[in-house]
Image (cartoon, rainbow, N blue to C red; front, side):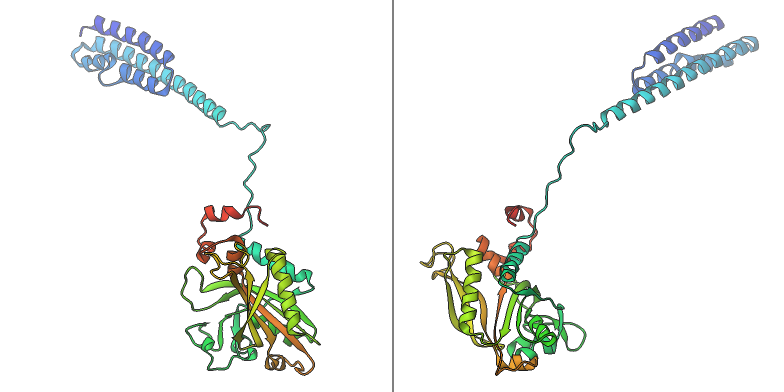
Length: 348
């Protein structure tokens, strides 16, 4: 390439390059312009490579001109790049702009777990009758969980099959909230009217109707002149308050070490009203165990069993919730499936 041709090429490339840079509408177009006018295959690079074949005087003149062209193009590239980057940032800010005058998105309200709903309703029914709520530890000792409740050492409930012991001798996870009744009677004299809600633990296989961790609400009434008819009337009032005024209550004899006599309490089926259906089978749904407090239990707590009598009852919250909501598998309450839990929004 002769010197004159090289000079014309440089002047032309400077003019074309500045125009292309100014017209670049994006950073991608600007990069293509840089490669086209300053890249290894650009006319400017060809002139640079041909300088070695020119005379010293022509080399100095064209070298100076090539440097001026490159400096002009570099300055134009930098200025246009800054302009395009600022424009891109402005567009990003506009797209992310929040209109503070628009109303905010209302968060979806949470709801109580169905077991919490049922437990609180059970407790509320009894507190309206005049009972108060009592609580106790979930880790119990042998006395409060077994001996004081008239459960002898050879009773099946005391074996490792049913109870969950911890690594501290004499302590275990409570198997029922009846221990709270013992603690309450140890702390106060008659009259006593308490309900004890809480979590309990047993070594049981988990299936549709059983769990190793579940919830109970137990009740205790001790006073002068309390009879079995008081127990029946209390449970009838409870069942009708929870399941509807048309519900009937049936008590069948049963055995529990801490009551005498004891009874298994059932309510008439809410679906068939006692006729018999696929849910209840015979028209009745077992709900809880109850009975008159065993005199020995009263004596263990320092009460005069000749003067005072009482009744006690205990129910599984999960079992009541299954009856209340028509749920056929206890495990659904613990699976955490949002589709199941959504059914109970607004239930409380």
